[in-house]
Length: 244
Image (tube, rainbow, N blue to C red; front, side, top):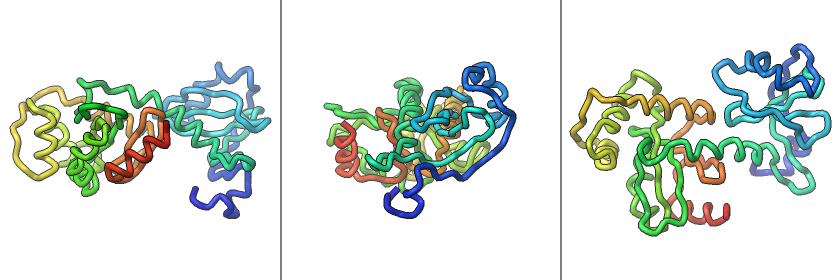
């Protein structure tokens, strides 16, 4: 939030969704996960715990945060701020929820452009046809020179059964995935070994949905920080150094 002193920020909670449903007590919540899951049928409820505000519980749904009243009657979606420290507590919780996704795709489940002397690694959700994704890839040597390894996973924004999805599958099925990805982003031909098992694209896309991503490129740091949009190699290095 750019202006903490805006009218919205003077509130401790800013809610955009308020829903009433059947009550349960705080100690019954673990047994009531399936009931709560009905509100989010496609995303896993990963944790429910006391919120920083008395009377509220913090519920992690995928990598998003919701707040429940302790009597189970109300569900609130919004940003929770500590006015004294001017800290967005919801974002802190979201970073904690996103962090496990960073380690989900190893070298055999992503396309890695490693730095020779790495000081940091960033998970990049990329669309082959996205202009700023292509600009980021054009700067890949700059990121590597700054000690930043780039680990790509696919986010075809047009969704399954589209041309961008097919391109992602073709890259994954190439013998040299790094070379194929570079050529695909430059509209150059490359050889692919289809048919092959390209189900990884769907796995990547499921994480996109869990994280609630809508734009590309989207960058996830090892701390769970989400950076949406292109950043130059020097800008990204400065951000990552601020995270340490």
